[in-house]
Image (cartoon, rainbow over all chains, first blue to last red; front, top):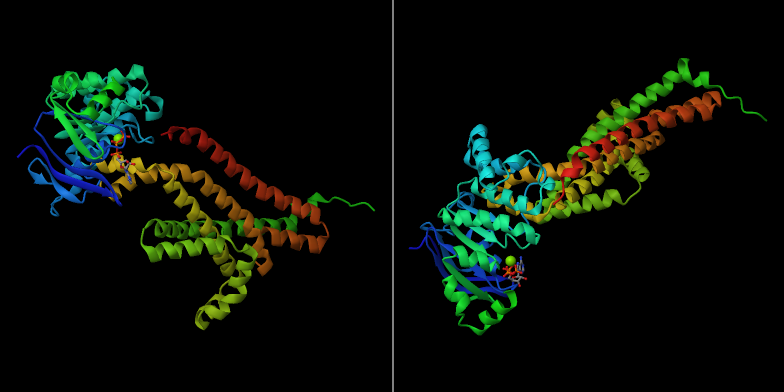
Length: 242
Length: 233
Ligand SMILES: Nc1ncnc2c1ncn2[C@@H]1O[C@H](COP(=O)(O)OP(=O)(O)OP(=O)(O)O)[C@@H](O)[C@H]1O
Ligand SMILES: [Mg+2]
């Protein structure tokens, strides 16, 4: 069984059928890029993986466990999966370092000193070591998003989900975030990235999937996906964003 | 026709002591009612947020009822009405205590708690939903997310309006003079009827109310300057 295995996934918001039978497998260390038009269900799909959204039909296995197994503790599942949102969602009342150490201390019971040491190392890794004691509001968007990545990594996750991590950023800040993500990918992190950054996809994705109206219409390695899209909808979409 | 100001009359001796006693009682009834209103208001706000239908409904009726009827009517209600719905032995016990003070405290508590509950509820509501989501996504459980992420933010937001509710309570407490609680306004009235120097007596009372309000307002302003700027999303 694959590391993340999604089988026949259906989800409805009320009567609106948002995911219409998604089947996908992601291996350990694989980087999957998900693209598609607005409203096609990309965010909903990745949010199902850490159960921020519930689904009504189908199964998702993560690291061999059915994530909907009644015996499974949803908090420990989430602790193993990092997620980075479009709007950063940092905690505004806590310093950058405290944003990063909160979950390790409270969820994993890591001693404060150790959590801070680890947190500072992560902030160094994302290039904002010197801002550790500032508040999120004092940072630029690109810096905030890198803190959000560090916060997720602080739980030592087995996989990372990214939901359009660069779409709320000014153009000049996009690369600083993408570079952190590329490093992660090269270090072997399993990643599901909803993004329209096709340069990123070309460089580090193992596969790109195209979603439309709750279905995966097409999937291929990036070279093939960009040079030779099969589906009319994909061609149209690529023409719009490139 | 000349009014002879006589400040020393109200600033010394017996009449000064009356006013000071009144001021102490005003602080006492406001303090007790304020503390009880915070507790009751928190309870009512939590009931409202609980998503348990009967509790939500009860909480909503409570706040709407007590916010939308005049405080003076409520004070008379507790004072004259308690006989009708409290058991006899409770009433008898109350009469042996300071019954006016008890009725006034209850009225001020209940009335203020309705406003406090609304402030607390809207403070918690104003925290963006994605804060809860982001914290749950790192593995914090619901209570941890509230304790470490949601409530600290709500608290910062809600402190200034809560304090102005408590100042309203201080000012509203003057109404309990109508049921004979000998607080500051009552005593100023007493001084007036004994000395016919109402202007001086009420000036002193006004300044005492003002001193407390302005001190507290100043503290809120400082608080806003130093803490609220962090909360940008
Ligand atoms: N909580 C919700 N309740 C009802 N409908 C929702 C909810 N969340 C999303 N939807 C709807 O589901 C559809 C898919 O939403 P989703 O956010 O997954 O799309 P997306 O592909 O991520 O789009 P975008 O590129 O705009 O982020 C949209 O039509 C959206 O309006
Ligand atoms: Mg989306």
